[in-house]
Length: 244
Image (cartoon, rainbow, N blue to C red; front, side):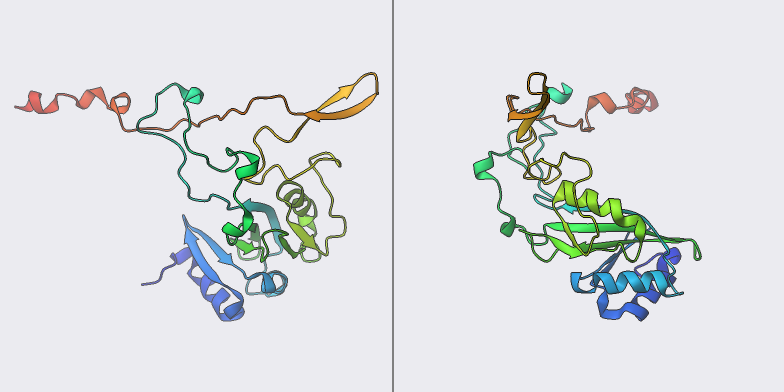
């Protein structure tokens, strides 16, 4: 039995036949096909996916960075926590909730940074997701896809700004969301939740000034649906007594 659904079987077969060992792994999850591409084949695969008529992925919809630091770690209390929403406490020290001196080092997390691309083929009416891990974690770098899909220009700048992923060959790789003097990359998991500095406009100096952060660290815990009495349908309570 095929491991891919009928909708993705033809595309998966074509990817294996044409690209071969240029694909590290093919994964299907919730009907979406993902191809994991080794970094040394990132640019070559992009050109083939765009120009090969078997694929014809002429449109890049999105590119984003991913930081897998602490991926899969469970840091939230659920069953024993109270139901008071965002005031619930957190005992563990997950990503972004540790002291800066005790932050996890990148070398402890292989394949920490990755780039994810969403492609669309109008000719074949199908989609494909690509994932590529940066080979070096202390300076994550991948070839730019600007020459393949020009729409990726600002997406790569965003990933550079927020995650610090460098795109070799990008024509104008600079920050796009944070200030030019901003220090660090705010979407990295080891970036402090309260930030490094606070920014305000100084009327006397007539310019923006940077000052030390004065905000106390605070963790907002997302609501978690639990299997308890609040979610039991009262219509079914006592059914056994009624049928006896």
